[in-house]
Each structure stands twice: as C-alpha cells, then as structure tokens.
Image (cartoon, one colour):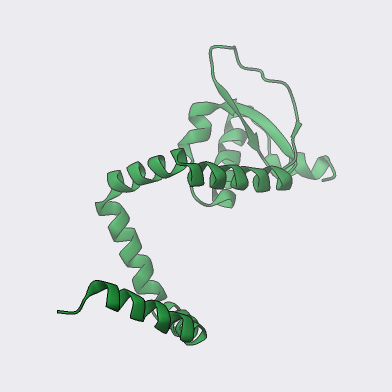
Length: 150
C-alpha cells in the first residue's frame, strides 16, 4: 500500500502541472452528465434532508458562512430598491414581511403567506406570492405596475 502523503503530494503536483487540461475535462464531463448529476443531487437531498439542513445551519453560523450571507445580502440589497406602495394594514399581532412585487416596489403581507412560497427561484417565488396578493387585496399586480409607469 502506498503512503498517503506521497499520493496527496503527487496529486497536488499533477494538478498544478495539468490545471487547464483538468479544467477542460471537468467542463466536458459536467456538460455530458448534466441530467445524471441533477438527478443524483435531487435524490441525495431527498434522502439526507436533515443532514443538509443541519450542515447549512452550522455553516451559516460559522465565520465563513456569516461572511457569505452578508455578501449575498449586500448584493441583493444593491439590486432591490424599497418603495412601499401603502402602509401596513394589518394589526400589530400579525407579523408581516415586505414582499417585492418587482425590484422596486414592496407590499406588506402576512409572514405565513410569504413563507408559504419559499423557493430557490426568486422569479417563481415572486409569481406565486403575487397571485396570493391578487387574491388577498383584489388587485392585479401587473396592472398596478403598468399604471405606476415603472
């Protein structure tokens, strides 16, 4: 059996000397196996959901995780503006979130309703919550935005 330090040193040297070749190989492999990799990740997440949540929680509480979250929020805040269309109509007992109906305007909605449609896709989240807003406030969000000359 080989010495592990020798193998790791060999791998490091090989990587340094063949960095571009390795990068190109990985790029081709990822393109050719995109669907397989996607299915694998989905299945893995389904079977290890609690481990993934714990890992994510622990990472976000670490120093690097805090930096990453802060960086993400700063980028997001530069992209999104904050103009409330109206004041909060809900009583103080109901916790609210301010939902961006586009990158400019926000509307108050109950937190439970806002969190009901949490997804990794911002546009999908926006569409789902905007449908709920149309039901709740009896307004057409698209028409409202069009009339605001955004």
